[in-house]
Length: 69
Image (cartoon, rainbow, N blue to C red; front, top):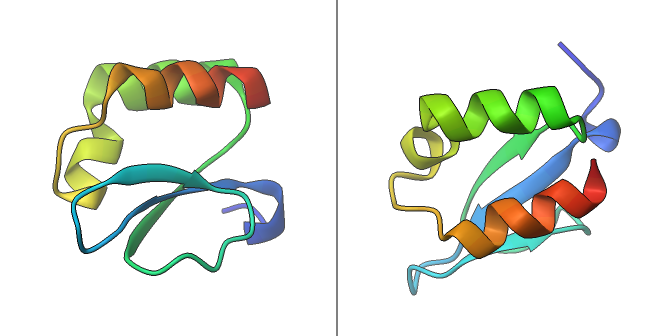
């Protein structure tokens, strides 16, 4: 368990768009991931974000998340 302020929130809005939410206040279903390349690789391989958000994650989101790591 980590403090929520140290994690990156990825949100899926009701329109189905997936975006990185740096403010942590965007509407829609959200999932948190640590800003670490190891965590990101595990989440991508296990499709953890897809399961949490209940939709496919575009590759651009993973690329953008890697800039935070």
